[in-house]
Length: 478
Image 1: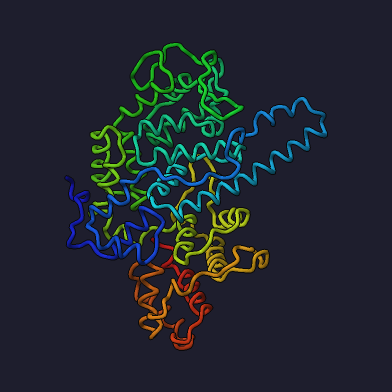
Image 2: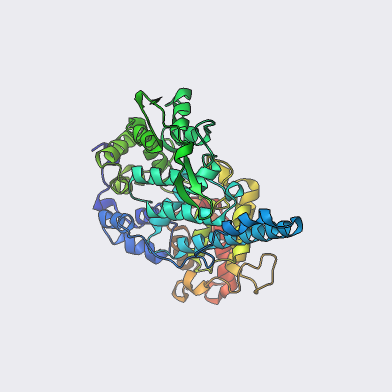
């Protein structure tokens, strides 16, 4: 095996590396979670994440028969204008409320799931196959797509690509639902190759045109948001695509794309950049792509190799990735055992942080990296951390985030309040899940000097101290 992808040995496995796996294969966790992982072997720790079974959570209350409301919405055309407008306003308000509840439901899963990699991968696929409710305008379609990502999160690339391409949210967002043989729409065909499978420079304009012809007829049942192949709209003629000729349909196009070695390299690079670091070494991408092809496009062997590799635990990776707003928020909630904010407030918070779930800025998804930490979004992080840690009375406060403050006894148990040194050591491990730079320790020490003796600390002292730690540059990294 290539040197960078060789598995890390048991001898160098420690708390820091276990915490790194906890952060990257999930959304962080408690000090106890990291300590438990550190006591396992690297192989068992990785298996703990990757060998998950699909988890079950209660669905949002509005999910059920007829939850898409499209039949009801379709009858609007037959109503008088004033009733039609009133019904339209009601429908749009209902969709906004459903989306707020859906975001809260997903964040709740991220915080409470026993399978953090399942949700982390679902978030990855959400950014990879980016669609926005702002154009789709149907909460049920966004929910369906989210469930598809979760179902195939660590499964087979061929299956996921095919199912994601047939999702009504995708067909609406990239204008394929109405694509027909006499007017093929090229939007989905282009993004299928450019953003989802190959990348720029690995296809031609002629390939786009031929793929668009093959994808005509891929549509949906608008009364229940399910895939529908509209045969009369399909171009059944011969097409020449990437050197192959035949009466291709959409499935054939996807099969031909996956035969290109570039397809496996492209998705393995994207996975590595999401979970490890940007601009990976060519041998890392080549090695993972070869493994993906050899394992018939099954992701689990690739994920296990990635999470066990020396490169994954190298200096390029550990504490070198800027937390996405979702990663940051879930980490704060888990660290303080904090309840999920109310749906409306959570939506507002995610939007202020710069990552409103189910509404990426464009088909490329979120830029990530330094784009996450603008001056405005950093201020929002600091403010929201304080609100979440200190809480507010139900219905009071500028955000009304929650009723109860964070559990200070969980964050800093009494036995660790014997001295400033003891308090610092425990809080650094609990909040940062690893070591921090000497300059950050000095800043934390200086802050603590302004507090009374730790034995006298009450809940507010601890929450203020944790808030200070969460407002440092070090806490924005994972």
